[in-house]
View 1: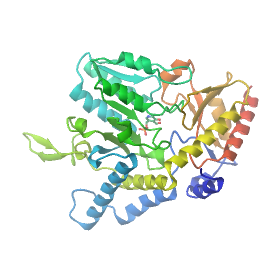
View 2: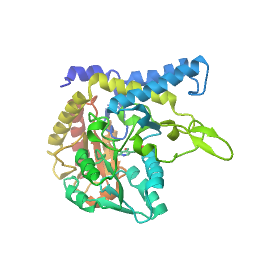
View 3: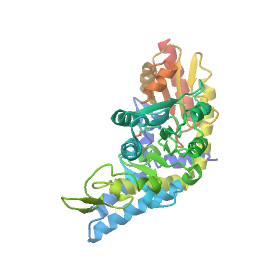
View 4: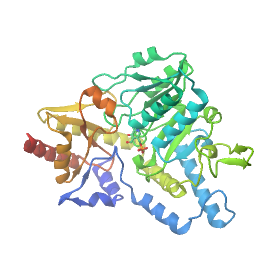
Length: 408
Ligand code: PLP
């Protein structure tokens, strides 16, 4: 396991963590919203702009070829990171949200007709609800929802029973951004595939914490954002099996995604470019690859093991607080701790923690149906990354106790 000495070396890669907030040392526990960036990622962006900035794919000149090579190498780095077979199945998007919108629109256009059904779950982020609702409205489809237990675990039997010949796709989060629940995605995919139904997995919260092998899971689509895994904002990934991507129509039209354009008829580029209209974020992709290599150099399994210890410690400590209620107590859980204390408003706790230098997220976490399920308006969420420490958890618990005392 990563030692405290390893962690203090790694923390030196994140200059932002040395900041003081309202006079106190920053404790950054909002990693599920976005992670901080190591120097290597920021330096890659700066170096790329200073030394290799030119638009890609179309240029004959040196700089353009250099930038194209870096962008395509980044695609290979993503392919390698998730264990995909072929880099043509890796589409660069603006992030998880755009990737899901792409699939909902394009897959929906090709494969869904009036009366068909889509399956999602109660614990989805709005990004994995609203694009399907837009599609359902357009095509008059039905959305079926998998319920969860009080602990925050999916009802797999219910899931089995609602699958039918009208179901066209199952779209489920790998890890809940509120509950931390790690869903049994292998089981979900197996059950869906027994019925010949493809599965999209929202990997936004899984990618920084779970060692992913896309072939083992066998998901048909897998989506995530770079900024959740120490990479830059504004770029993300859609992994899709080519047997689907080949059949799906383009999501957006423009440069890069065409083979030949005439006013009579336009033909489209091969994968992955068919889905990458316009100038891509070729600086972001390179910085993203740097982030993935950085994570690989630490080891995602080591990261997960250490974060689990942080979560265990934080859970034990927080349970000492009277009237604490934790949302998400599944057997398999990732590094997010959502809670409320008695009737105290989550926002008030967030503000008082901030005044003591502790950054947490409060509110509905873009999961309002999940809040409705628990009959609450929101929670406080502390979410951890490998650069967090046990000492920071102690600071957080002390600050939380103080906040609770003030608000009780
Ligand atoms: N899905 C989940 C589970 C998330 O946690 C998030 C972001 O918090 C998203 C989707 C949306 O990600 P992005 O805003 O990077 O597109």
